[in-house]
Length: 428
Ligand code: PMP
Image (cartoon, rainbow, N blue to C red):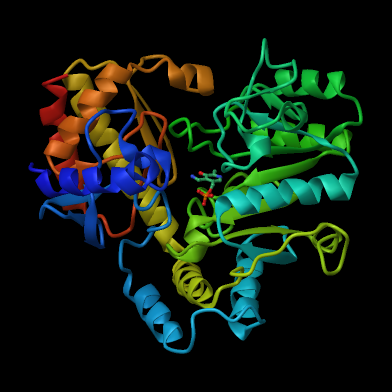
């Protein structure tokens, strides 16, 4: 495929936008080459500035669960835009989407809308700290909760020591309050709690990790976290920015039958517009301003266009819960097809899948946490990525990302993809 115009546009962008992109992973740093510029998208397909058609497995990193330019969302946004794009005042539609979200998601009474997943997670942690009166948080290596300071932390000399920042600009003062644990390792979590008695406000987790590839919770890990939180007066925060309204109507809480204390949303809840949200039971949410002392605000929060898009999306998902099974079936079909052709071509691999999230790792060991995810062969991944791109299949340009399956994908698209993987596998 030819990417002449995309390359030219990228060169122009680099002059005025750092790295040519407004979010780093878009820059193809992990795989080499220059990013593709999208002209438009419809259903399961992207159309780029050079006229190439690509089957999209990123889907705006998750939200396009019903495909691009999903008509009810487009119509809702267009109609709303005609009536004004922002007021900074209450509108009825905010209550409508809040009521719908509260009815779909277990264990929440109230929800507050923000503008991104980052804001949702950042605000959830502040609320947890305000509610419990404690400062420290536990997060898991390889889980991403947005780019607010508290989350950009890596382990220092071992996970039980204080965190050290992994971005300049994050202060040691902030880093010391973030403790890092290994995903799926409950003993590690217990050690951190024991070493920091009565200091931990919350544990934040992606209930299915989607930022080190797709990594499912194993051996009742979520249930064990719930128990340990209850025993130590710690709030459990589920970051459902990827999993919310995707794995089930009620997200991972419903799928695994585990209660979280605070739930964070993004992506799907805005139908592709910039939205996030966090939600909890009354006891916790009533600590938020203006009811309570924990401050949180936003000029564009509850923006009418975003609410209209989100409401159209959630309404569609709520009306047809079968969608979640259908998505899981398509994902299983893809999983089996890819596994077969990689095995036939003797390519070492592991595939992880939960619902409509799936990832291919080029290592034979099970991928259960960040360390095992990082062991994958990145050179093979790079070739795999570029090979698929050349065949018209667009997966995320990083081995640490999940593929997102959309309902707009047909079985012909899935077969096309499996066939493309077969062709590429012969070149690896
Ligand atoms: N949490 C998770 C689980 C995410 O995957 C992301 C984004 N990929 C975020 C939070 C941050 O969301 P945003 O990019 O909208 O700030």
